[in-house]
Amino acid sequence: MERKIIKYGNHKIGNDYDGYMYSYNFSDGYDFNSHLHKCFEFIHIIGGKLIYTVEGTDYMLSEGDFIMTKPNELHSFSFPEECEYKREFLHVYPGFVDKLPSLVKPLYDRRDGYFNRIPDAMVKKYGINKIFERMDACCRADEKEADFMMLAYTVELMSKICQILRKEAPEQQEIVTNKKTNEIYKYLETHYLENVTIEDISHSLYVSPSYLSRVFKKETGMTIKNYINMRRVTKAKNLILQGRRITDVYLECGFFDYTTFYRAFMKYAGTSPEDFKKTNKFKIV
Image 1 (cartoon, helix red, strand yellow):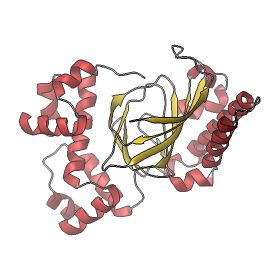
Image 2: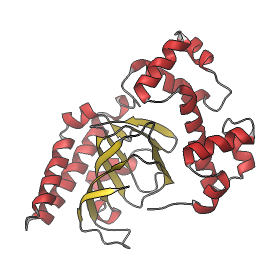
Image 3: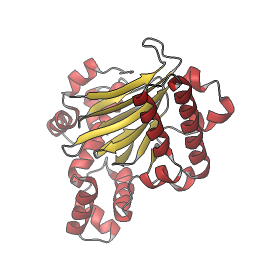
Image 4: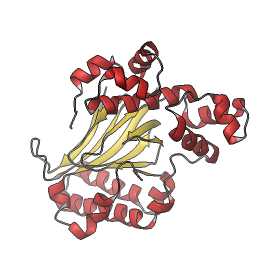
């Protein structure tokens, strides 16, 4: 169950164009199906370990990491193991952002599913964590000047993100920090829709199957098989949201029979493919 500690901002419910909203939340880890926002979303992870999927790109997030999406960038998240999920986030709506066109151009120009994650080390290098600390302190103090201070912090945060995109994005598109795990991710990105086995991956990466499984499980908290199925289900959800027929989707997503697809979908989506299609035609929040 979600437990909100702080929520502060000038965004009005029902107005999808203007304002900002800062929130500090903690809850038990839970899965959130594919959805869209009409705003920019900036999340700083304080605790927990999760897989965040943006437009088909998977990011492993943990304490200190930062993840961002722009309006209409499709994303979802799930947790490989039980944990307490702590985060603080800032929603910034286009009307606020568009007042600063030259500053925020990199936020719009970043291509979908690319460089959504800023790792903990870079968060600290550019002081993004310190900006969030000042936001949190400002909201808790509830000073008369809080509105002006929060506006300044919001502009400062966006400025830092644009600076990172300009300086770091071409070199920093790594999903996780472990080199061997990155190699596994890159292999799976190309082959996860195929009938791939651990032996295939280990042969390609010149390591033993046991070492491969151990490294991946240590880094991600899940087995390679489970990751492949989760990745396939994520693609299936996105295709279903696009209006594709379920009988076509499961074959296209690497499942060779409907029963296996159905079981995997129930496990990672928490509902049947048919019910998902009925209730999630396009979830915009």
